[in-house]
Each structure stands twice: as structure tokens, then as C-alpha cells.
Image (tube, rainbow, N blue to C red):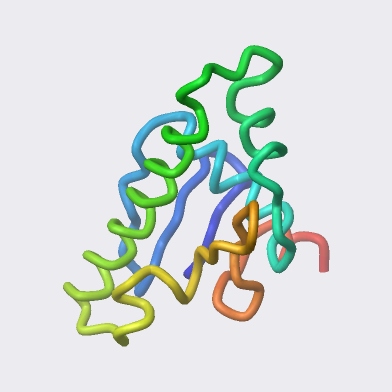
Amino acid sequence: MKIMLLGTVQVSTGGAFLRLAGERQKALIAKLALEKGKTVPTATLLGALWGENVPPSARTKLQGLVSAFRRMVRDEAARQGGSARAAAGEEYLLTRGHGYELAAHAVQVDIDVFDQ
């Protein structure tokens, strides 16, 4: 999976671009990509997505954004005949205790390449 942060946030897998669902999902993926390989606490993600005025429903909405992203990955992997783990979206976006992590071994971020 490749994540592009330079310019518009985009995600591609197997050469196909995923259709991210709005600005919050793009912000979620960007925040996780900047911390690739590290668990980002849910509270940090809520603050990044909603700022100081986090609504009571934000945790549920965050879970929905994660689920939607995994579903997009799963659907694209299935379309391309990908592995069962990729088809579940589990290879890329991991749940870790009270947070989420983009798997460093499975995700390439354009900023990492740019920094080299």
C-alpha cells in the first residue's frame, strides 16, 4: 500500500487508488501515516480530527472511519485477488490497545521517500 501525503492525501493498493470518504478520513490516514509503525492513541486521533470540541459521538465515528477504510482495502484486495489478511484490511491498519497503527512493513509513505 502506498500513501501520498505530499499534495492531496491519496492511498493506492495494487496500483488502484482508494476513494477516501471525506476530509476526516483523509486526516485520519495522514495522522497515522506520519506515525507509521507506532500506535497512535485514540485520544490523540480524536483531538487531531475534531480539535478541542470533541463530540460525545466522536469515538464511534472514529471507529466507523477505521472500519470504512478497512472495508475499502478489503474490497480492493478481493477485486485484485489479494491475500486473506489484506482482504480483511488487517495487514495495514492495526488495532493496538487504545489506539491504531499503520503497519510499517506493509505501508510506504511518500514523505519517507522524500526524506531520503
